[in-house]
Image 1: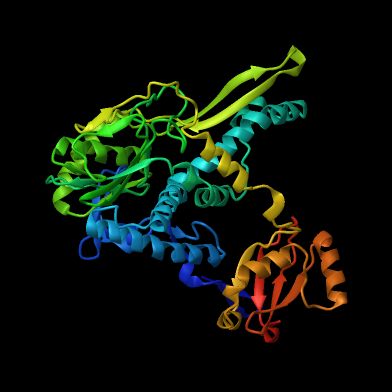
Image 2 (image 1 turned 60 degrees about the horizontal axis):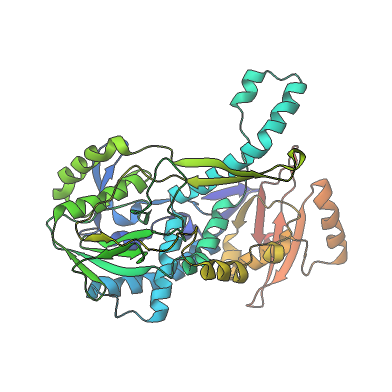
Length: 465
């Protein structure tokens, strides 16, 4: 992608990271054959095949700043190594404690990073903000004489880094919330293969599944199960051992010999996916289509729920509402021939282990301590070819953080004074910094348009100013 301005070509930072995957290539490769993966689109009900590296991706899905996607690649190399060990040995016992911890990070992050995860977290924020504030907006608009029929069609859209925050939580505190679950490997010995989807991590609750009520698949929900297909013949499962056991399992392994069990597990992928089911062999086309047809009438488009939990207060003037947003349980009952329900005799609380919940709250603070004090918007980020050659991307996040927070770096006092005024009047903002290589780089945020919007920030060398 190129941006042309003042007869100079700018290359958006790190074009190599433009195409961003929400399911990593190393994971999809496990469900491919000769570089190709089979695809079933649940909307069109059509089959096709593509190179596995070209699916589950979108231009700038996360951000136009390349640092995030590059950091994902670094994590994925470790996750690839760990999953390769499990697949090669069909065993969890070869994992070190550190490897198993990283495996939990993979599960929670993969669950959050998908297209479906992004849509769900944005839905949570927007539905909540509309529930709270839209009545006040409607009242003001009606008082201003706006047609009530048109007001009803309006919705407040909360723009912000919701997905980034969700993924941050998934990488930091979420793995600790599932660390109490027991792992097991399902080994598929049938003629039917495991399938996967564009949202492959399944959070489910066989014991408490109740589609009519609040969701029971939170990371600390009693009875939680997590299903993660690893290959056509292997699936990683994490489960709450207070409620489930698996007969004939040994040494964290369970051999599965019944096709109905594989179909039951594969059915969950249809409830989870956004658009596509993926599998290895074209010979499975008919089985995938029949399986979809058998459960299609149970699949709903909208599993979102919003409820008032309670109203409390000593007087009618001091009422408070507790609002909960959640994803409702799917209308499907998972039945496995080897799964035994072993309910805990004690009372069931809202969390499996409050010590883990307390640990997450005390050790992961998402308040303003680490927030950037942003004074203006950067718009699109563009790095010139010459600046890119000076390895500016190693310093890019730090540079942009300083620039947008009013640390103008090494420009002279006149430019600093002009920048401070530019925050208010919308004129050009210029800062300068020395890279770790010793070379100087400049950051220039272009002037705002007539509406006050800044659309472009360029990262340049001195000769390109």
